[in-house]
Amino acid sequence: GKRFRVRGQPLTLDIKPRPKEYRARHWLPSADLVLRDSWEQDPPEFRVGEPVTRTITLQAKGLESSHLPDISVPETDNMRSYPEQAVTGNRTDGKWVLGTRKQTIAYVPSRAGRVSLPEISIDWWDTTQQRQRSTVLPAWEVNVLPAAGSKIGRAHV
Image (cartoon, rainbow, N blue to C red; front, side, top):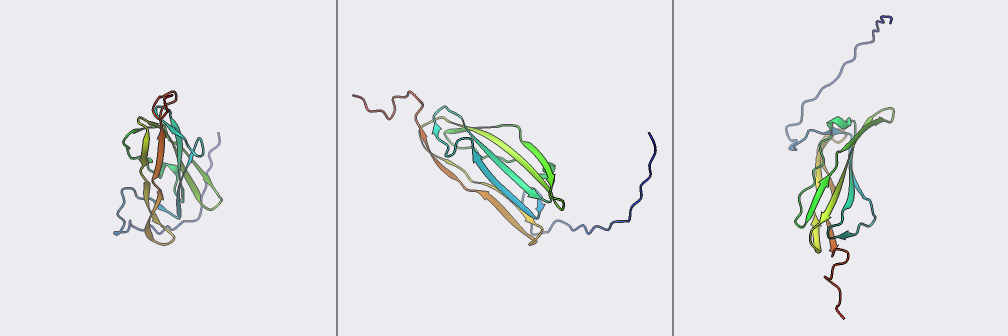
């Protein structure tokens, strides 16, 4: 191989400290941060003992995927959750890097009835408006049906 030497013009960066008013667990300075979800079946049908798959996607404008936190799903009574390994990626639009973290979770209900899936919230620092913000997936109220073949809820003749 040949040895190459490359020189460029000096670059000056203005590095600002983390704002004192920022009160979140993870430091996520971003021009935009989006949290969204999708279900394998839309709308999802919950039945005792049967898995329902949800994919939660976190995308940040100005951060690589390695800077994005794990998406934690709060525990829920009567519903077990099984997260898979997150899938991460980066792309660029020519000006910004866009980091993405996708987390797939299988929910398996253990009892029939109403179950609340808690909201998921991630705090971040809006570099455009210079203020702390939160992006939220709202809570879900779901009706869990009895297991297939179950006599619960059936009329006896």
